[in-house]
Length: 353
Image (cartoon, rainbow, N blue to C red; front, side, top):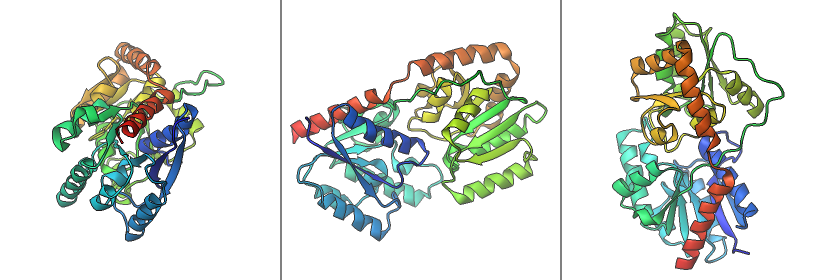
């Protein structure tokens, strides 16, 4: 049996965001494929740690057996004190979804500080695991990490449970968006695009937890100013069964994101055979290749509206894109594939140590 590893993750593992789903399923699956892994639960204030969170991290890392390989969640790795990281007497794997300083909406000074800290911390990583080729390319080009020191562990996907009966498509046609409420997800662009299509018959649902309360308030105000209260609903977090029903009844999936290190919800939409309308930014073009969706420049309201209109009005084009999306969804990896990449990275750093 392989030696036990530790995986340090801040916050609640049941949080319904792509990053938390990825790390929870990875933590669950590693033991299933022969890699014992303990969860080191950390205070959830990262990447803006309180003094209590920093002390909690230092204490819990000190309590680990000497030499035990450690996987560090990117929210922690990219913002922790470099001296604490450098003092670790163990191989450390950085699990980076995307560089923290690239988060949309950050003040320039804060973004620069996060980028500088992450670059310094990467010098102390024995290996880096990322969810997409795009994130690897950024780390090589902008952070000086060698390509051979990075492994790509594409997210795995649990296939949707079979529906008890074929779900009828929603009437009027449903535009579904799934993404946490923050500036990066571009829900403001989606609202403005939908407002320009008020002459068409549609309804919309935006599903996701609130990450930034000020963004939520501004989105609700924008929805009111655009006269969309009766056509667009914000659901918050909903049970998976309810979300699956929305996927099955929707006509199109839309996410006007400003950046994605992977974009797991895009792949979830593909597993349901939904045509995807999103933005050609970050990892999205690789996640949604040509023929499985329509991609437009980020923050381009007219282009996003035109793509939505095509999926709402052109049945032949809708069917073509939906078929490509379903094919892409059928080829997605499983969590055992993702965990196997991390297991290999652990084997590598132990051998190097």
